[in-house]
Image 1 (cartoon, one colour):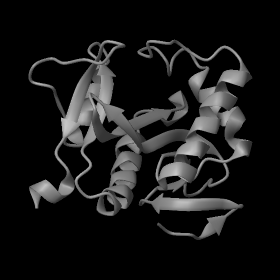
Image 2 (cartoon, rainbow, N blue to C red):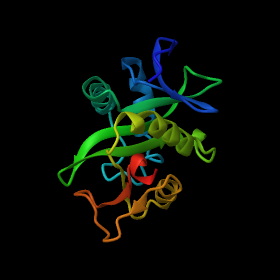
Image 3 (tube, helix red, strand yellow):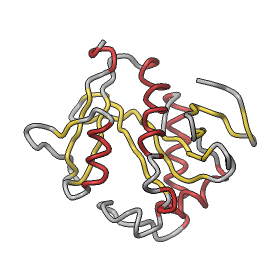
Image 4 (cartoon, rainbow, N blue to C red):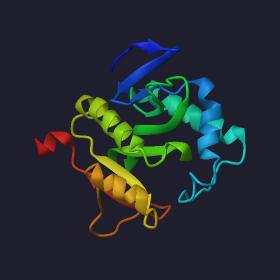
Length: 183
């Protein structure tokens, strides 16, 4: 992990157009703007956040994941505007069906859609995290009707469970073999 800071942010990974940083307390408004927007939550089984306290709880979880695991979801900004969070993306360790896995996550402001940012951020996050956690598979939990997210997961190398398995919120489990297994 790169420890360079920019605007008091810890850079986790960078790509050609994006900078991924550890989330910080000042990100609560960005969390709420993105996760409280009905458009960005069209496929979210919980719907959009309704109050800033929900965003604060989510952000607290993001920060805790980094402290506990040394990996987690990142705030994403364009390189030309590093102080403006346009989305959140990355990998978080969790347990799925008794197995320790990474959950791949990406959610961006509608103004950032259609530019390939989610794929670019996800690839940067995976390139940073997977070598540090060999053998941990990457999963994504995606509602069956969320075709844009499912297509993106497929472009990233994840495939829907062949048996159609879903989690308790009826999100289809997508899975990618660990990078070390494909080498």
